[in-house]
Amino acid sequence: MEYNIGDIVKTKKQHPCGSKLWEITRVGVDFKLKCLGCGHVIMVERPKALKMITKKIEKGEK
Image (cartoon, rainbow, N blue to C red):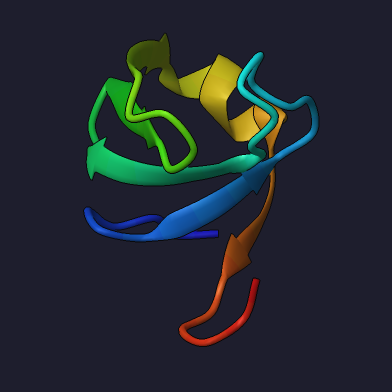
């Protein structure tokens, strides 16, 4: 699956704030993800990010 900046994705495990939704802010060798629950930003290497993402959320879907 192809991911772009601004996409909203759902992860397998939830963030400590309780949210499973993240916004992609950087794509490349690493993914930069911003938690939509609390705003925390993480950098994850691409293979690990592809494993933790379960699906891409379409506009209007939650």
